[in-house]
Length: 121
Length: 162
Image 1 (cartoon, rainbow over the protein chains, first blue to last red):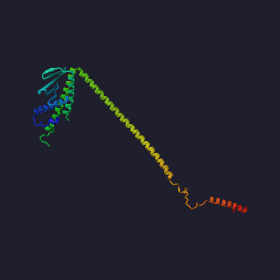
Image 2 (cartoon, rainbow over the protein chains, first blue to last red):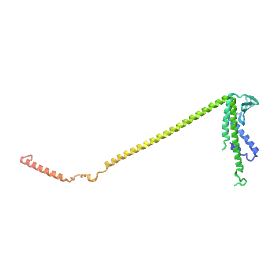
Image 3 (cartoon, rainbow over the protein chains, first blue to last red):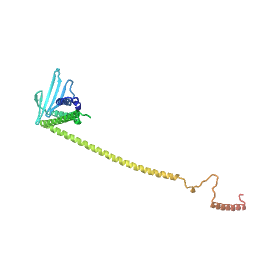
Image 4 (cartoon, each protein chain N blue to C red):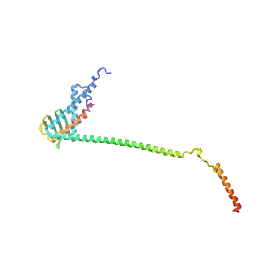
């Protein structure tokens, strides 16, 4: 996958090429992350990814029973003394069960993304 | 030979491959660090998570040790079985050799029994042809004849059956 992403980027200048590559990599990471929570309902979209070394993002979009397009972006800021969670701009508490689920998701994400994207040999 | 790139590592292919490796390695390290940070933050938020993880790791470690023990025992069993088989093979070979030796003895006896006697010990009787009498037989015959002659004469004198 990683090699595939690298193809076709040779002719561009280094800065542009690098930016494109990181964008594509993040997209694939988010796709893999979205699969960690089970099947995504039809018409819905789910992404989970590591934005930087202290930030994890869970984004979900769906159509509600009234046909309205809905979305929720949850951001987890990892601080030395705890976790700050913000959802659609509002700060929320992270329960023990949510923390447990998040921990499992991060462990799985680390394993799968490294195996599938960055085991470069 | 590509004269545009006298040093092979300067070619775009090699340079991009090196870049790719560097980027992949950077991303891998970045994700590992992010995951480590996240774990520390979550454990800090809920210390119970830390205890749960410790218990889980201990259970996994115990399971791993048990699996290794089982593997070790299985390997020993295989070794023992191999030794047992080797011993049985050796025993089979010894028995086979004993059987072979016994068979050879038996067949040697059979051969000895079947083997003809030396020609000097063999007396061949041809039907209708009397065996040539020895000197002793001849002497015994002469004595018998003499005795029988005396008997005949006695019978003649007393008016016997003749």
